[in-house]
Image (cartoon, rainbow, N blue to C red; front, side, top):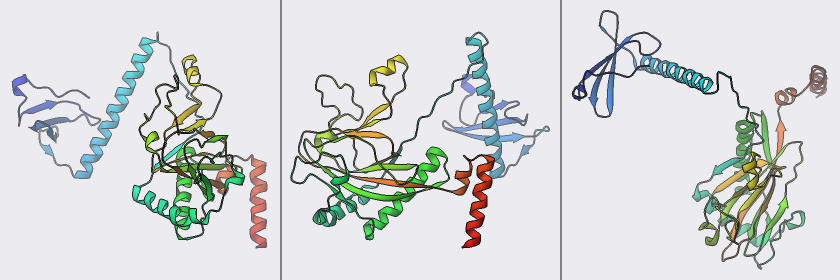
Length: 331
């Protein structure tokens, strides 16, 4: 696609006309009227110089095709330059994907409702969930990990939302035709000195998801940088952060071209993270006033028959379909 030309800089004024041949895939002459400093009116002419009237849909289709043609032309030029710069050698890069992490932002009005439910229902019930967890939340009389039932009105509403989030994560992150079913949920109430050591979560299916939603964050954590610049010198840069770990490399190993295999994530009220249940993580202690409150949850993953059959051999598919037919016939 060529640039529109004017005879002189003085000709570039409102209402000026520029002609350009063979713009786009149709080899048409396009007459462009500049109607203002920020807008162009484009008229397409036929071979006799008559204006071709386009409907809005035709214009959109033409512009879309011209944009695609320009993009292809640009990519081809980039590829040619790359080969020229690399002595004519064809070059390809294959990035290796490890896994996906989902990040969801909840409206603060919903967070307020959840916190109110916790304050009025969950905390008074005081149904400890700590026996099956590794969390060391014990430094304050209010430190606790409490069961969050999903069978009351608020719980059922959250269950619906969480299931949709998990299912969307599977589709968008892994193109997986599966449904996520949340089956566990609890609240974490951490105060100064409390922490959650290195761990992962368990599920009841072969694949599973875990996640957490931050509900309250003390000011001593909120004022920290989102991305820690240094951990040296007792900086306290990651106090109260969640540490995600999916390998053995440290931050310095990136200089050796080793892939990043850890991340320190600052808690933000209303933000939820979703990830495979095998992902190791820990929560760092903090030292200051206030409560660091979150919800944690686990999902089972129910694969559709189509998803299961993607990973079967021909014989396995035959046996699977036969067993399915027999089950349907007997029911």
